[in-house]
Image (cartoon, rainbow, N blue to C red; front, side):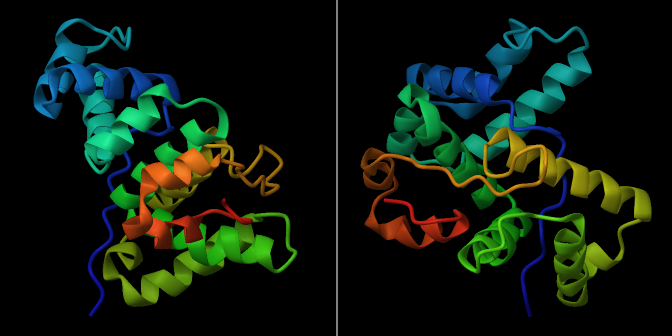
Length: 196
């Protein structure tokens, strides 16, 4: 039996700049709970509502916790596609659904010379997974729509898909692959195109 998908994607977007800020704080504090508290108490994300500060900081910390210290260090100083690639790794490690979609649909379509990511491709994948994962089958139509929009926003924010739903492969440097390490080489499968 397959493990359950984690579906609580409360961040709604990748929030790249906020994620960088959190990672840099972590490298100073080395405690994710302290990082989250400082973000909320000092309003480092400049959000008016305390509830928003709590929700968004929780989401970002939840994702970044999946990076090793060396990966977080790489992410904190990375630029360009290296930055987006490491953040995508953190998101995929947090949400198995996103990882499976990225590998089985986005990367696969690109490999088979299909350069777009139409809504139908997402919907077919969702229905296939709903047969395996009852937590997906139980979602309301509204919940499904919100999740689809969130996943698309994450893909766009991390530069894997553009706003026209065209697949846009990342081109991280060899330093990204080295930061990921040979023990995580299989995770490169979430990226469309060859990642060197």
